[in-house]
Image 1 (cartoon, rainbow, N blue to C red):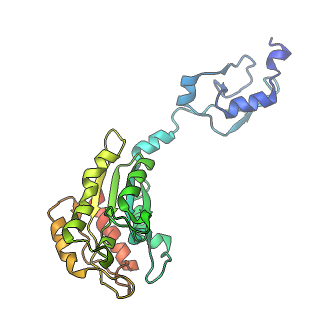
Image 2: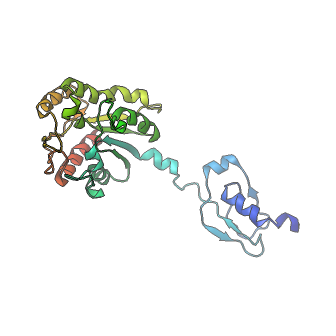
Image 3: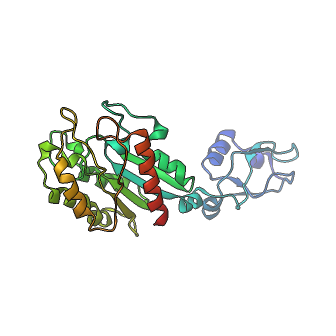
Length: 276
């Protein structure tokens, strides 16, 4: 027979022990006063307690304990092992910029989120777009436009990743930056050589580069070197890893995707992702 001191557990201590994962019942409490409470690191890693409470009959401890779950329950680590994590790194079109404004189109109409819906629950899309972001390492009055610096930190902070999609290069063609087609193409291809050195994973994520969609220069809004676009694309076509999303419909501002453009872009990217 257990003494009153043995079974008179401090409620405060008991709650703290249970909620911190230190205290477990070896089986659900069914009335055996000799039922043991087990403390064990190895067991604690294998089976976390569920939040289901079991009220012991008066003949036992007379307190609420957490039922030990079955070890067949899917663990969070198992889910992580199955789910493929994809980082979408881009500019205002990845962000979801609406035409002639600083606002965003509806969440569900942005191409990264359309892609998420199409790929399903076995994929997790991480949307990292920002208006004005460039592929190149250009020092401007807004340092955060520099695509390279932010890319380094995001690849590490979103670890683990299975795939990184980079959709940049349009802003690099703005007139004020005076970049040549050779420079812009090289800036886009930089990500292919940089990713393996930046990633801290044992096996670096794969990379999908998406060439800039054709745009129209709009005076007073988006003034860019239209004449260099074809040369940039020609240089990028030398690299089979680059995806060319041709014929993307644009909004009236000439640079941001329309709703149909976001859908078409997501369709093209989905096909390539599933083939990887």
